Length: 116
Image (cartoon, rainbow, N blue to C red; front, top):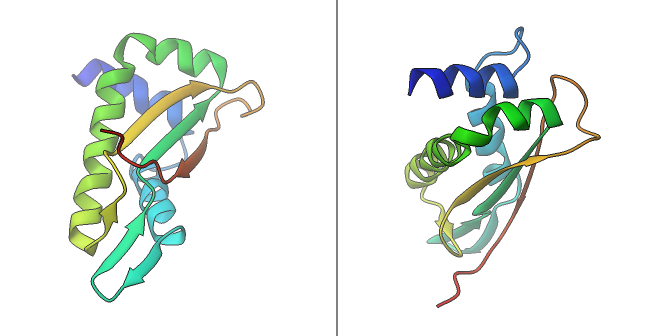
């Protein structure tokens, strides 16, 4: 676990940036894209894609499911604290993006309804 955690943070975050920033950006995605449905329900994105430079993505390939699971758990925890709801299960995917820039990442989010 320690190995993938170190690789994840080295891949996602430039050295000068704090590790918590990735989780903070995921939280901001929820806050910034929240849809207030009524007094009791605020809907937030549940599908996140973290686009990484190709080399960073390659280094995380073997552990991407664990990394994504950890980040999804952080989103679920934050949403519970804020009283947010989701349209479906929370999913975080790691993807390669040639235009993300060296040592940089980009996060995209959307509402993804649960299909039964």
